[in-house]
Length: 191
Image (cartoon, rainbow, N blue to C red; front, side, top):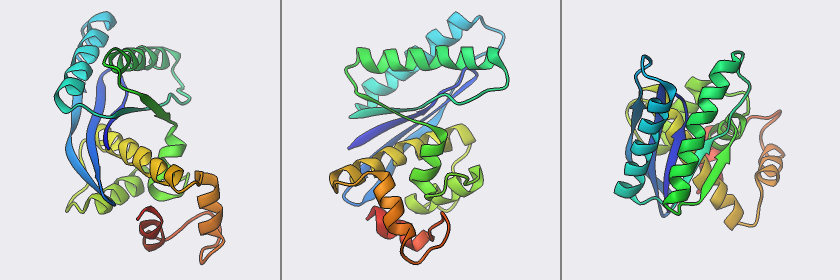
């Protein structure tokens, strides 16, 4: 399965192409789409639409996975990010690519099995899962990789006939206490 992970934004859109090969992940490409803050919003979202469309044409993903919106303190920010998400969803739909969506909490759970994991903990787990020497930079690209891996992991759980709640309960009732699992337990879980 080839997944296009997207961390939406207006100034920066993180993207990642991740392949599932057997029980492993292969990062094909990741990066960011930048827009000029001095441009009008309609030009910025048109640029995002064009770039996402080109990524879909170039890499031919099986699914596009987009982070859902979460609470913003600034209403103006949430509106512009929603507009960005809208053109991202439109680009995928026009290319006949199915779309999946995950909240930030689901991504943290999907990568680290801990909903309160810090950004650094999630990035470190992504680094380990990919067997990389350093964490992915910038953060927006790293977030897109995490979103893609979360979807792949979710598909594995679904294929096993489990939902993530069942997996969490099963694993937490083993050696762990509270709502954390070790890296070793997590690796066993996703293999």
